[in-house]
Image (cartoon, rainbow, N blue to C red):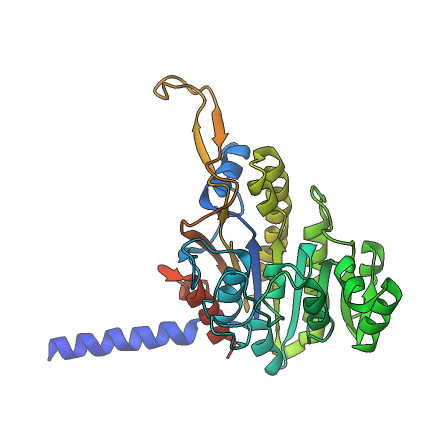
Length: 357
């Protein structure tokens, strides 16, 4: 009898906990392209071990990044897994390994009447952002992806990529016309972006390709602007925003630790904006992760005998490409406790979709 009573009490407590959990209305999904655990450790060192935004996570999990056809993923396959909940082949976007299109987190959100947006420091046709709106088995088909961007139902898209829009539509003038005919307000400067109205969908193309390395506060400012627009457009239905620190990856490919620190700083500023938003809106979940690690960064003692008093550290790289280790997931706000343990990258994508269904 006592055992039965104890089981009932545990079940009631569990039900009470689930009922007490804040429902997730908004998701802010931040992806640091190429950010492995060593890059996070580098920023902790850079910050002299004072708590970084990563240290302030309310929960942490791990994801495995391999793709359907390779033990080391590219950004297209990992982006698709994170966006849709399905693993696929390297270079594939928004389709499974057999070419079947799959709905992304953004498309599921749109079906529910939620507002959706992407903010990146690279061009909007790049693999990670494209995984959230495009369906094509070739990440390098930038002209075709440009057409899918223009025809997408995104409410806000901020980044670069005019070069590929011109390739698709013939000229900047034609591209602008196509964007406006699709129902977007076309914007090409940060000043204009600051004046954007939520009554119209916003497509901000701020550069021919990347917005630019070492772009200062751009990512944090663009994230704040997107949040304001999406909050108004989503209303009671909420929103989903994906923000990518895109150029961190390139600094890993270049094995340039100092340049990566600058890009990481901009990304961390954007995370701060997202976490501050979640602190003021208790129904918002912030998820921070990466698509993969790049460069195989290691942090070693600058002195051969590390038992001596600290002489500093050296950053050493093992590859110019991607690497296949697990990637941390940092969680803040509503629903943070619901994502735990070690999982496939596709499982993380599936969990996020389930949270808004």
